[in-house]
Amino acid sequence: MPSKVLLKSIFSTLSFILLTVHSKAEVTYALPLSGAELQIGNMLEWSTALELNSERFVVQRSLDGISYEDIGRVDAAGLSNEEKPYHFMDIGINDPKAYYRLKQIDDDGTTSYSQTALVHKKMENKFMVMSMSSPETVKKFEVAIDFAEEGVIEYQLCSLSGDRIKEVEQSVSPGLNSLFFDLENEHEGIYKIHIKMGDEEESLIIRKVLDELKSKPNVASKNGEIGG
Image (cartoon, rainbow, N blue to C red; front, side):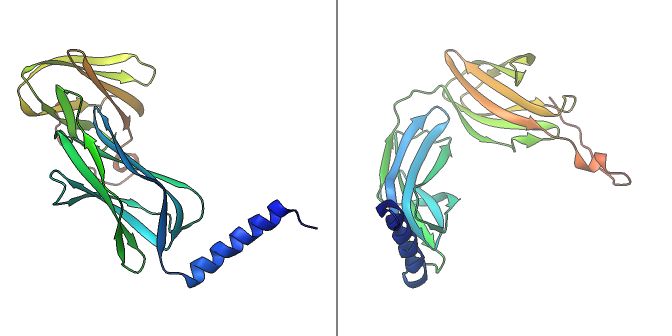
């Protein structure tokens, strides 16, 4: 005779199958949307306990709690009756507070909204990474950084084991500044970038990849000059 635990598991599975066939789209949250401030931006997290025909989550942000704008999307599980965690990083946000919500969109196009999460800014960052080029690069990696004040920064390009490959000091002005890292003559692999201003430091991980066009015979590859 089947145990009670086995029967309960079978009943739960059959119930989920029947729901997916006969029920409308639905999302039940296991953990509501929450946000935490990091030096690089605001980290948003949530999880679902049940998803029926869910298609995607659109992350929305507001600075006044009234007008929201789309800032990104996260693909949903579609069909799930187990807890499914999600996260999204809002890079470069430097406002005193930010409101976030999720616009959940189903396969049939219907939408619903999550509760609102509010993130207060407490860290007084001297600089913040606003954007960056692809972390997988053949030659050059670029980072756009917003500096709160004038000063001198130090940045290093290091191997994954921590060996310093290049170390540079550079004067920066308040506002948006760009840093360039030349990896053209470096070996394929993973590298770390450390950016420091005073006691504040930020680290990024990038990967040097091979130029696939160069590795294929009889295929022209256009190369441009890139400064380092």
